[in-house]
Structures are given as structure tokens and as C-alpha cells.
Image (cartoon, rainbow, N blue to C red; front, side, top):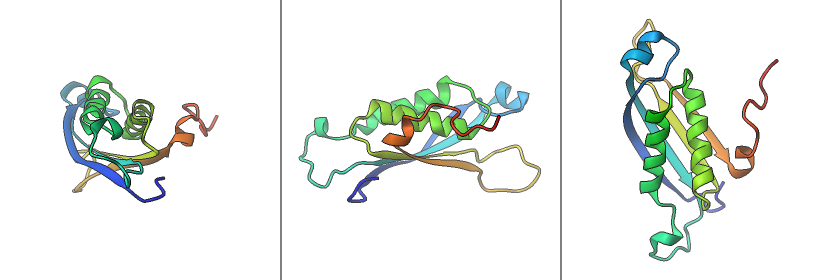
Length: 134
């Protein structure tokens, strides 16, 4: 994490996508909301975009991950977004990604279901499936 605690947050990015376990979710899709916390030390930055994390590029990457792929688990989607952001934005020290599924097909009344992942550079180098039970 950033030693200064500095971060830029993209909050409430909304997309229509087709993630989920059920066939209806694949066919009709649903609304997904993503929050991305971009941890990097900008305490001594000058007013130059080339020295910053470009959050327009971050938005585009999140959009492509959410709408351009289909996964069953929002946990997997959160991990793929986090890994992509760390790979594409070299200034990032860590990211926290939340993928909300406010209309999850559950039998009760609920406000939201979300998966949250904080991933640093060292953790992003771990192979996928690490820690999986066999």
C-alpha cells in the first residue's frame, strides 16, 4: 500500500453485463457496479498527467473487463479487474476493487452483494488458481 495513504477512487461505475451462474443471467444480463481504489503516492506530484495514473484509461479497462468477458463469479471479475489495472498502470502500488451485484438472484430482500479484493504488486504476480483446493 501507499506509505502516505493516498488514493484516487472511481466510485459507482455502472455497466450492464452478463455475469452469473444461471442461464437467465447470461441471457438477460443485469446491472453491475464497480468501485476502484487506486493506491499510489501522489504527495509530491506536479500538475502533469504523464506523472499520474490516468483514470480515463482505468475507466476504459474496467469497462472492457466488465462488458467484454463473462464469468460466473463476481470474485473472479474483481480479481481480473485488479490484475489488469496493476499490469497497465505502472504507478499503482495496490488496488482495491469492489464488484457490486445489486440484483443478485436471492430469495430475500437485500440492498447489495459485492466482492472486494485489495491486491498489491507482489500479490498480482501470483499465478491464478493459487490456493485452490484440489
